[in-house]
Length: 336
Image 1 (cartoon, one colour):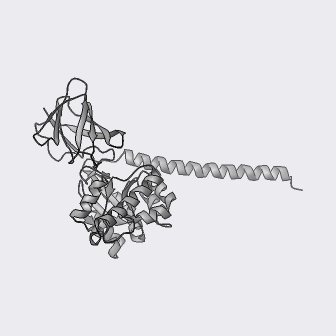
Image 2 (cartoon, rainbow, N blue to C red):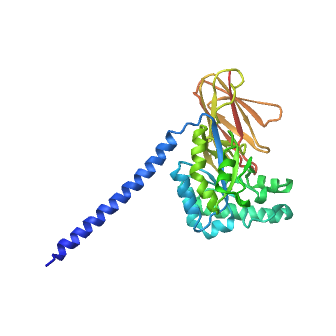
Image 3 (cartoon, rainbow, N blue to C red):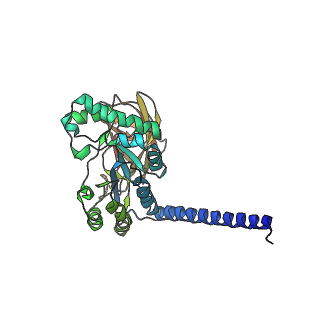
């Protein structure tokens, strides 16, 4: 006769062992992905992988799995309606380390609308993404890549940087997986590729895109709100293609500080030399109202600040009164 207590204990033990094995496999996969990212050679620079039209039930989760398992991060340009209806997937995008952008509320031809309708399309999407993730997007991709001066003015009101693309994967036009991989193979440092959330061909291309980037010493980076170009994931400068003015090596990395309704703080860390000159170019009508740990000077326009060391180290900061424009200024570094 079978001892039921012993049988139950054995079953529980087997279940526990199986669960431990699953957790170990998951942890090992995550660790492998982290090591893959850490070991990546990014000497040729960074590119922007972008996916439009999400999130979509049944597609987005698989896309995120493919990206993370291949050590890739990407920018997801979400449609506001989709974000509203799939809030868990928006949080999954954030938690997977992806950057989330605005792709309008309903994907209309925006250039055929009036400014108030444009504002509604962008503003509603900003609001829902901020509510779900805690952060409002800084990047905007106009549907169909259609833009004009009125739309850009609306983008500026909301502090959004418009991002088009350098390479079109044509996945929306029936491109095969091989053709999508081939398109990604044309990416160069700083460039951005257009892909979409919902196509099986695009999903199947992810591992090959990752392998191709690694073979060319390129890495998947973020899209800079200052320039709309792909940069290192921490927002730092790309590997320079030529020595900076004045000779030597100098890199300026900008990062966010505190933020208020009317202003925000930024800091810039310089590496490579202790004798540097950093140029900060504001986005009109922004204004710098305070600086620290550096000696500033200004050009005649009042929108270009030159900062030099004052003996306080290689990190300086400043406060920007944004006046409706939240986009970070651009920074460049040269040796003194």
